[in-house]
Length: 277
Ligand SMILES: [Zn+2]
Image 1: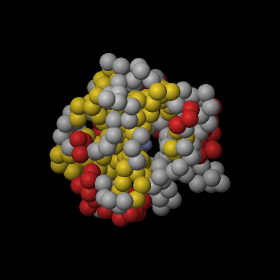
Image 2: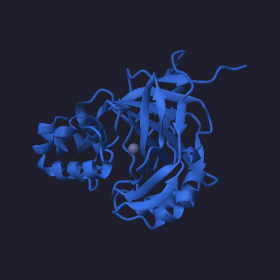
Image 3: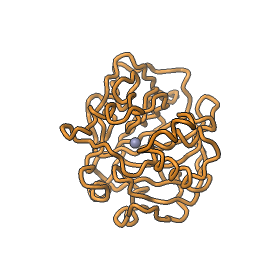
Image 4: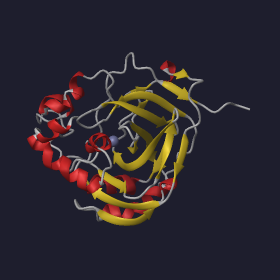
């Protein structure tokens, strides 16, 4: 997105500028990449037939055309029989650290944003700084056709605007520790950012080193492509109460905020598993 286009997008200019201020961005590249994940009121829904459902996203705004015409759209169904065990993938290098954070109801989801340096992940020698995380329910990615109750997206950005998202899916079971830490804040979350104090992203447990890797897109408009996805293979658990709190907190109509899986034929998916001893 160019600087020019930012100021010729009447319906998004103010949102974009607001996100600039909120992010205290150091560069436009970084900001434009993060904008889509920080919009407030979004003029899209998850309900087909409303004119603004997932099948219409690409027609709502000219900047959202990827949602319709893109070739690498997310989420996808991850089929074990189609993944390639890749020798090029290594252990996910994660170097998170505790940092101040805020929680916010973005209408279509609940997000936690770190306002200090919360560390980074490293992929192929590039560092991607941890920016924020948010939840979708039910899950957006499916495993061999199975959809789960919840999916966490942990969003990271590189210094030149690259986006890397880690996804963790949850089924009902024992409470998730990270959500337990945030539970009361989620119950009382508002549309204004609420300060949480220090939040340790290391509290987000993966439970496995195994992961799927593919290049896809953001799962909300503008559906920007080129996103590096790391989907943790392990299905973790969250309690019914925790999932309900997230669904109750978002705006009416967004209780289910999962985009349907997109055509994935031809999208190469790699799989990392630690070497067996
Ligand atoms: Zn997401």
